[in-house]
Image 1 (cartoon, rainbow, N blue to C red):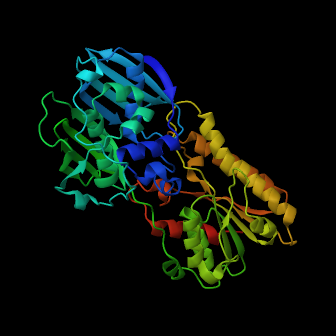
Image 2: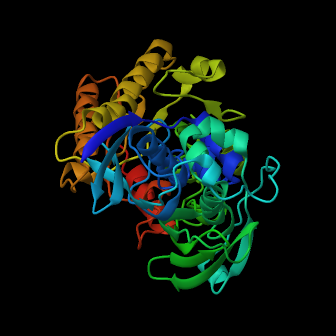
Image 3: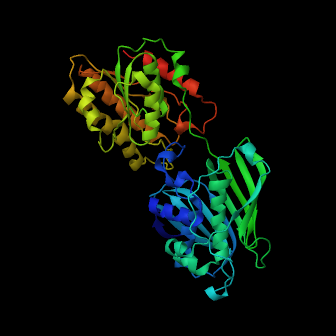
Length: 477
């Protein structure tokens, strides 16, 4: 295959594509909502990535104008800002384009084209141009809701928007083809499955003779597989027909509430603690904050993003909040709320749950960039916090530092070498810190627990998360 170029898609481009397509799924637009998915960050629209790849192909190869067939397999999600390599080849008259993230295939695109060579020969534009769409909320369907669902979505063809985003395709592809492709991303991201969706595959054919609706794209669920949370849909209008394959992605994890935790914790069990929870707005940090508060501790929590999540946790803790509100603290940049910085020396226990999205490496060699990201959170951020606390310590008592490690240090699954390496390095640093005598340190190796980052794994529960974390909290020296 021949490498054509490397490109990336920014958050601003994703917003422009959402306006063009009508696909406003928050996975592509809202960094706070996206962090609660298994991906941990905003992703590009898969269809936008495919169209950008075709834009590159049409810019660098002599191709006829219109499509007769388009097949796209979305193999791996692509984050905004990721460097995407575009490779292509011709096989028996068919063009294949592959998008690579490093050495991992993210998309495979196969197309065949007509022999049209001039825009004037292409089919007429849509009967009426659509106004700029109003931002809407994605439907939140379940697999059961989708059984035998049949509906249609209006075609959109914002010519000026596409002329900016995809000028070459806007010049050569018929408006009807582009509008039909755009409708497919809207169906998946907004209508079915909707909010909790992952686009897996798109197959379209573009017949020469128009038939059916000219201003909508109809879709119908043909098969729903509960074993894989997978849907197959047929799509059709006057200009295109084919199939869509999509998955339901896991919903954000709801951790055990404070009332339930209070049934498992003795009222004064942690009453001797004034605890600071770094990363207490969700996940393990949220559970720890609630458990400690249920046991009588005075608790303060921090967040890097997701102020609303942090406020909800703080409100649930209520009278056990050591400080009246959650505080912003970014362990990577060092940005910290001034009131929290002034209070750092007053806490008896520090719980460090800061973490990036834990990604499985797609390479056979050590991914230095991924390892550096883990180190920035686990090692460098922790060192900076400890340094700040030591500068402001107001008590002669030895504070406790709780830094969860992972069983992956003992037996590392394929693809998690960088994560295990970073955790092992933190264990070593914490042991050295404890050896100096100024800190008590706990670094329990925790198994995989039920959080947003493991929401796709079956068999994990929030109750197991609570039980495991309570055991670790009670073993603190």
